[in-house]
Image 1 (cartoon, rainbow, N blue to C red):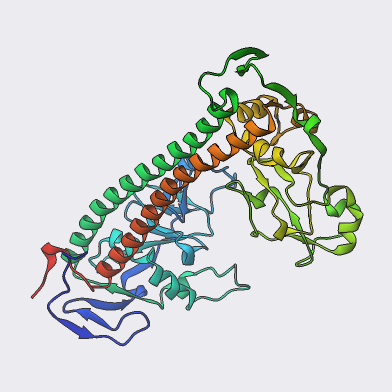
Image 2 (cartoon, rainbow, N blue to C red):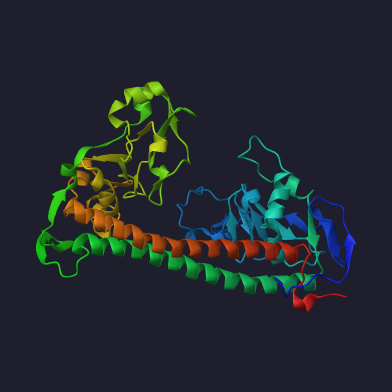
Length: 439
C-alpha cells in the first residue's frame, strides 16, 4: 500500500468507528442509503444463499445440502445490485448480488434508495470488513451470544461512510482487480500445500515398501495394491502387532450425560492434521470413565477414526491428554512394541492404507470401517533396526516439507491480512487509489 497516499484534505467526524473523512465524503444513516426489499416471488426463481466466505451465491454452487422449504411463496426476491445478509452478518454473511433469485425469509434484502447515487458493490466491501462486523456486534441484541441477528430495524439506525459515486466506482474497480490477483495467489499457494501434503504420503509409500537401500532385493506379494517388498521383510496383520485394538462407547448408552469438565472424551473432531487437539473439548465424569473401562486410553495409543467424513485420520495420544476416553467413531490401537508405534503411525498415513480403507468402508449414511477390517490391514514389517531408520528418515523428510507448508500458509495468512487492511483503508478514506486523489 506504499503507493496509495492519503487524501489531501480531511474534516473531523465524531462517531463510533471513524474520526475523520476526506472532503466530499459523508457519514449517513443506513436508512438514508438503503431500503428493505420486501418483494415476494410471483413465479419460480433460482434459490440463492449468503455465505460467510463468498457473499451471495447460487445454492446449486454450494457444497451443501439444500434444506430450503418446499413452499417458497414467503421467500424474498433478490435483484442484481441488491445486497443481502443473513443472521450471521456480524461474521461476514453479507454480499452484493450478481444474480436474480430468492432467499430464505430469515435473510434481509437491501436495495439502494432511488434518490441516492451509490454503487452497491462498494458497500459489499464495507460490510464485510472486520471494523464493520465489530460495529454490528455493538448495535444488535438477541436471545444469546450465538444468536444475534441484525434485523433491518437495527441496521437502518446504523451509519455508513458514503464517498462520491465516482470515488465509489474507482475504489470498486481497484478492489475487484486486487481481489482477483489475491484470490489467484491464494489458490496457487493452497494448491502448493496440497502437492506438498501429497509428497509426504509419497515419501511414506516409497520408504515403507522399498526400504532405504536401493540395492535391496525385491520380492512379489499377493496383495493387489502392494505388489512388492524387500525380500527380507514380512507382511503382518495389524491385529497381530497389538496388545489391544478396540473402539470407544457412547456415554449416553450407560445412562450418563456428557459434562463440561472432568475426564477428556476424545472424538473424531479431535483428530486433526495428525495430532490430537484440545478443541472442541468434550468431557465425561469420573464415574462414567470407570464404567467405560474398556475404552480408557493410554499414552502412545494410536487413535484411528473409523467412522464419518474424516475416516482414516490417525494420531498418537500424548501423555498430557490423560486420563482420557473415546467414543465409538475412534478406534484405539495399543501396540506390543514401542518401536512399532511411530512406524505404524506413518504407515497408516500411506496412500496404500487410504486406498484399502475406502475399498472396505461401508458407504451408507456415512463411511464406516469395521473393526475386523481395521485389524486385518497389512503392515510391511522389516527388522526393528530398519524400522527405526525408516522412521528417522521419514521424520526428517517430513520436517523439510512441513517447513515449506508452514511458509506457504504464512504467506496465505499475510495476503489475507493485507487484503483486509487494503479494503479498510480504502473504504474509510485513509488511503486513495491514484485516479481519485482529490484536492
